Image (cartoon, rainbow, N blue to C red; front, side, top):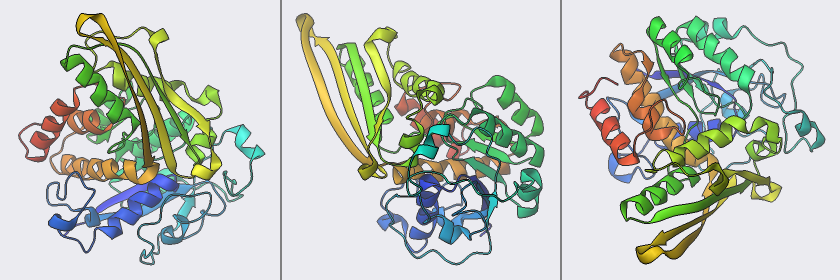
Length: 364
């Protein structure tokens, strides 16, 4: 079976979970493959994905084989597949740009990024020589310049782009049009988790609406101990993240809530939580007779495997789009697994669209 050849920007916790998953499911069958939304997409199972290039800026990862780099600090996610085959693919030195927030220099090396002294590689040339078909972006939140730099690299290398972080590229028409003109697909922006804070909040907001309950106020407060949460202590890097998460909830409501009554976003960094993310959710509304009610929910998830469960579908949907010569933003999978796609649909509708796309009953 032909492999899906991917390149990854950022060999952090999300990349670690994804690569572990590729090998975890290798010797499994459909009936015992727990944790997947789809066992097969087209002709492809998770183990048909192959990482052929990788980029990072941390000295503990640059120059290391991928099978070793995914377990290097500051990565702290759960190791559920420790046996990863040796590989000749080594992590290349990427371009720092705005990928590292200045405040992270104030923390111990075990918890933060340590910039390598290696020279940055020619990303486009590396992508071309690797044979990669898809470039996957796992850059830190707030990396606006870096995300656009790598998107342009994907265009120049003429490979697909999956934007898993909240810089608006797939949902920016000027960018998606560039991919369409080049004849290559793009998926984005900002990955949801399988069962995470955003999808849970959306589901409950939709439930309120369908059951005739007026949602009047809500918050979603998130804490975690990985580099993502440490990075997001710099509130200046959060504008697109907050917009992405808030819009994902607002979009399912019949009437948009006043900004004063909805608060969604990362709240604090708690080092001992590591890759565990805690979501504290409160929703206040009124039922029959204007009688008040509220829901309070606490959700605990391992953040990176939770997102990898969606990314592994995005990669395979992107591959079948390449095979079908589909270009530009892939509406169905973007709407289903991303917080900020161009077109927001209900989760039920987006799921239906993805199934139709996989079965080749809809174009994109």
